[in-house]
Length: 290
Image (cartoon, rainbow, N blue to C red; front, side, top):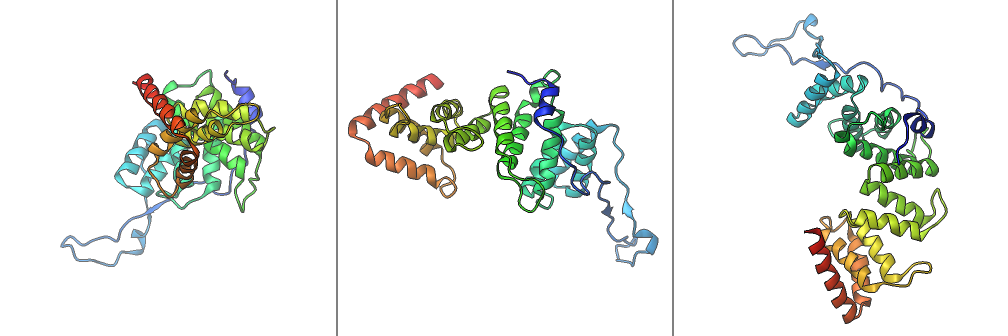
């Protein structure tokens, strides 16, 4: 299902620009001038001027320069180039800046600015003119903006809006098949946040994400199946299979300790027959993937 541009804009009203975000590019100070023989000299007053900003042929050229600058560690110039490209409508530059501000990578962390850059992508998205090559980072912007709307941003005018978050996650889940969006959508159905609690819907979205290798979805799906939910009886072997896959995918034993805990509890409660059938399910799943 696709959402025409005008519907996307109705769903996602433009946010107010945060102060200073759309301002001019940050000047970069030149180092003190050096004498020809290499000895340091005191710079004259007229030497203390900002370095001239590079002149780009177009926003796309600025995008290339910005991405190359980020890879090379040229922070200030890279950010200036990305801002130029973002103001020129380059969605990849908007996404990159959003990710940088959200994580505090190369710039001070600023969730408000991240929110604004992700909003520019979502508000400007037109599925009729979309480039399929841009789908992964467009979907990522929808998910990131959904998370900001789900929780709000402390100390800002951006309040929690679970209903809007649900719409953002659903759009990315349906139109892009994004595993992160599917997982977040499932969590909202499991918790009854922004919508009516619905474990059957949650299991459906978890399965779609789990089948893509999303380990958090594998863990929650495994737990649902192992214990049963609603009118659906337990499927202990199948649940243990998904929990085993999630456990095997863990790379951060601290951050993903909850996954290891879910597996340990299920494995401890499983019978030998459950374990044997789960092993067969795992083998069969591996054959299908190959």
